Length: 351
Image 1 (cartoon, rainbow, N blue to C red):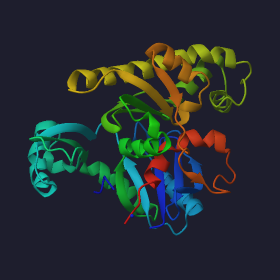
Image 2 (cartoon, rainbow, N blue to C red):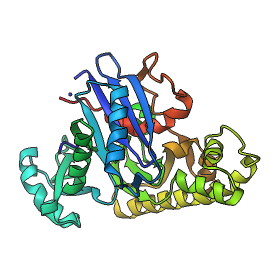
Image 3 (cartoon, rainbow, N blue to C red):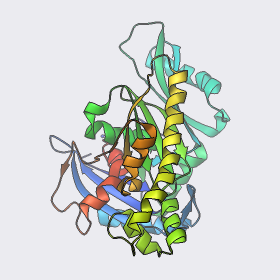
């Protein structure tokens, strides 16, 4: 498995609980260029809590997405995440990278709560130019079955995964490109998805802590449906700020405030844990939202009120060019917040 990671075009494929999203990035110019975006809806029960319940249905959606995005795609990059992926910054004896590869298995046994025979490991030395007796290393461990399942899903769709990334790193890739001036101090990036919110804590631009929160847009939509008697379609329009769903906009604020608290508490706890465990981390400086939840009216403001830090919506397309026609048939403003992960994946240059 290549976690850290070149061909002219790379396809970033994000297989989410509600949508399959593909971003095609062309690396042939002076700056990366977004060449094509495709979004394919998935049935609500096709993927539940990260588990693929209907592999055939999901494989069909992946096949349809890739056919529309890049029919002859050779460089597809996908991501894994969740509780079966461990990302941890550790300190170990300073050695050359080749020697570190020999030592990392032993180091992982001290930090990873999985059977070492069941995982795939990778690492990156964070301070290669330093000269002290110890070095800072970002350790990644992923359950092998998780990687194999994602690769098999693509194979069922007639595609091949050239790189299996970690979602936290892909999000960081896109964030670093889009917001290079935001990479100081401790910053959080929250990808508010359909069922899960991925929290990625960065310290001086390095992803050092990840958390998955059991909250997402699906619960907000279901609350709107249950409390106000809206259809799923009307509730979704309210969440996207496209209509009042029969006067629901006024009631949305109270619902959003409840879910904002879930996000705020999760981010606050992750940042507090980092501050207590790290020698260098200070308090949380800012939070950036992305994913479908970033489109919910008032969510950023509600989270900011509870966290008492700056909360902004990340701009995945800042820092890259966008080709004319890349969003053919799509509302670019509505879709852009969904693209942090697929763009981050597509920014990988695949050898």
